[in-house]
Image (cartoon, rainbow, N blue to C red; front, side):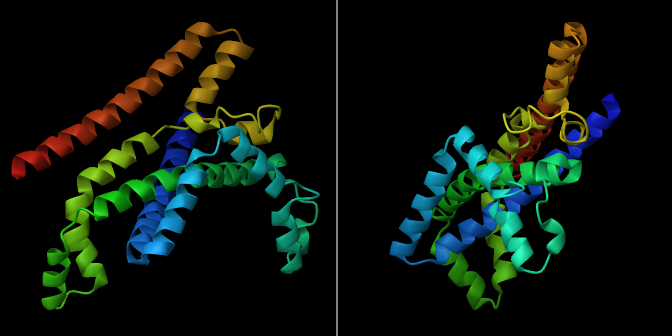
Amino acid sequence: MFWEVVRRTLWWTLVNVVLIMVIGTLVALMTQRLGRRMRILVTSGLVLAWASPVIATTTVFQWLFASRLGVVNWVLVRLGFESFEGYSWLADGPAAFTVLVLLVVWQSVPFVAITLHSALLTVPAELYESARLDGAGAGRIFRSVTLPLLRPVFGLVLCPRSHLGLPLLRPDLGRHQGRPWEATTTLPVYAYRVAQSLHRYDLGAAVSTLTVLILVAVLIAYFRQLLRQEADR
């Protein structure tokens, strides 16, 4: 059980980090190309989405993925997927895992997008002009100009995203038992369950300590890479 939770935690972290960073970067690049009014509108929407309370966002997602009156099921049925008629997303392990990934991505992308957009504004326009004059395309400009300059910022927004499942301490699946709960349990949730349900506070403390050690190892690796880059400059 423990090693299964560890594997699920690593998989959860990997999926969330990749989706958040990719979508956040794309949104930041798109925002940079918008006009002034549209940029203000998009940025305001990102701030509102990021500032929404977790309970409010969770409630909205519960409504969206409700089995009877959920918008997602209604849209899928209208598109011809009749098997989603009355489908209960939170009663199936992989489906519940998917919903939670979407929830965390929705909550995290605005912060990443706003941070990266602010960093993009500091990149001198002359660098882009020089790259275009040399015949570089959009992809080459991103790899050769944007990415190297924003690498420290990527690390800055990446570390908080490597939370090892902390958002799964949530109210939406807290009342479920069995397969959905087991399929979405990560190390912090497992530590809480062991300590509170089984009254094994020693084991819960050990799992919590292991989680902290993993996070410390990730931070040490990041700071070593950052210091190495600073030394190369």
